Amino acid sequence: MVFPRNLTKITFYSDNNTIFSGISEKILIVQPKSTPAHNLQFTIHTFTFLHLLFYNLAHTLPDASARQTFKRFRYPLRGPSEFVQRRAGKRPGLADTPAVSFFVSCSIRTPDTSYRHPSEPFDNFTKRRIYSETQSSFLYLSMQDILLQKLFEPDRWLLALGKGIDKDIRKDQLYQLTKPEVRAALYLAIRDHKYRIAPPHAALIPKATPGEFRRVFINEPADRVLLSIANDLLFELCPDMVHPACKSYLKGTGCGRVVKEVSQTVVNTPGEVIGWKSDLSKYFDSVPLRYIEETFDKVETRTGPSALLDLLRDYYRSDLFFTEDGKLSTLYQSLKQGCAVAAFLADAILYDIDEELCSRFGGDYRRYSDDMLFLGGDHRAAMDCLRDSLARKDMSLNPKKVQPITRDTWFTFLGFSIRGADISLSPEAIKTFQKEIEQRTIRTKCSPTKALHSVIRYLYKGTDGHCWANRILPVCNVKEDIDTLNAFTMDCLRAMQTGRKGVGGLGYNPQLGQGVIQRGRGRNVTSNRKRTGALDGYLSLGCMRKALLTSREAYNTLLASI
Image (cartoon, rainbow, N blue to C red):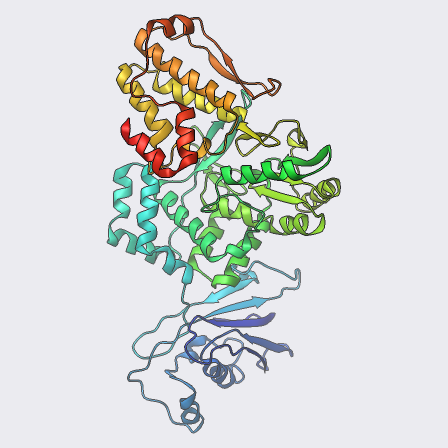
C-alpha cells in the first residue's frame, strides 16, 4: 500500500474489549522524511492492545518510506509483556499466538476539497480500508465486520424468509436461501467485495388521485431478503439515529397508537387553529446523494467499517434500473422507494430537522416518514423553520398537502381521519376496504360459503394475527362509520346468495356531521335484504370491536366460534 503525500490521519479501531478497557489517547508520529514535512496524527480508538498498536507504529512507520506497506504488522505480539523482548532484540515465539483483530480507517485531505467520502480508494484521494487476515501464527491487521457477522445470524434469515413468503416471493427462490452453502457463498462474496445488488426494476403503483402513479423500485428476490435483514439491522444497531419524534417503521409503534396520541393532543390543545399537517414533496425521490452518504458514514462511526455498508453505498450510487418494459436505463433514484433500506434512510436523514422542531417551538411534533404534524406551541414559526431547513437540504413541502388543523375540522393522518376525539378512516382506507370486500364477494365467482370464509379471514383472522380488525377497530371510534362498513359487507355477502350484485359503494364526506363514510345504495340492496335471512357464521364489526376493547381473550373466543 502506498501512502499518499496528503495523508493527514489514520484511525485505528478494535472491537476486543477484554484488555486495557477504556484506554484512548492520541499519538503524534513524524511522517517519513521522503514525504512533505508535517505530522501524521494517529488517533487510537482501540479498547484493547493499545500498547501493541503504539509499539508497531513507533517501530515501523517512522523509519519507513512513503511506500511502507503494512506487512510490518505481521508481528505475533501477545500483549505488553512482550514489548521488553522486542526492544531487547528478542522475537517472541510463534506458538499459541492469538489473533488480534483491528481495522484501520485512513482519512486524507486533497488540495481541491476538504472532504471526500470515506469509502473511496487512495488513488482517488479519499479513503481506503486496509484488510488482512491471520495466517499461521502471524498477526495481521484485520477487521471484525460487526454488521456483516450479524447479517448472517440464522435467526435473522428465518424471520426474513418468513416475510418473503408473506410478500409472495416465489418459494423456490426462497428455498435456495435456506441452504447453508448458499448463504456461506453469499457471505464470502460480500466480504470480498465481489457481490453487487442487481439493478431494480421499476413498477408503477396507483396513487389515491385517479390517473396518478408512484414509481417504486423492486429488487430481485435474493436482494429483497438481504436488504430486509440489513434494514432491520440498521434500526437495531443505530437506534439513536432515529429521532424519538419519528414513529415510522419502528417495531411496536403502529399507526393506530400514534393516531390515538395525536387525537388526544388535539383535544387538549387550546385555540382555534392549533397546528398544521404537511407532506414532503416526493421525499423518496428528492433526497440528494450526499445526505445518503452521510447517513452511511454515521452508521460506520457506530459499527465500524463494513463490507455491507460498502455494498449499500455502491448500490445507492448506481443509477441503473430496468424500466417497466424491461429495458436497462439510468435515473437518479434517491432513496430508491421499494428498497427495504429506504425505510431506515427516510427516518435517519431528517434527524436534525426533527430535533429542531421538537426543541425550539414548544409544541407536539410527530413525523411518520414523509408525513409531518405539529400541534400547539408556536406552530407558525415551526412551519417557517421547516421550510427553511428543507430548502437548505434541497427539499420542499408539497403545497397541496399543507393543511391547518382545528379541533372541529376533519384532517387525515396515517390512514385515519381525525376530528378532536373522533377517529375514522381516511379516503384511501375506505377505498381499500371496499376493494378488498368486493374482490372476495361480488367480483369473484365462488360459492356464498367460500365468500363468507374469505371475508372473515380478511377482517378477523389474517396472517399471524395481522388482520383488518386488529389494525382498525381499536382505533376507529365513530359508531356510525363502523355500522356503515358493516352494512356494506353484509350487503355484499347477501348479493352472493341472490346473484344480484348492485349493492352500491362507499365514499368519503367530511360534511356528514357524525362521521365521514357515506354509503351509495345500489339498486339490489333492498330486495336482497328481503330475500335473505340472517347471515349464519358472520359476526358484525361492532360486535368484534366490543370484544377487542374488552380483552384479547374475548375476541379470540368469539373468533373460535365462527
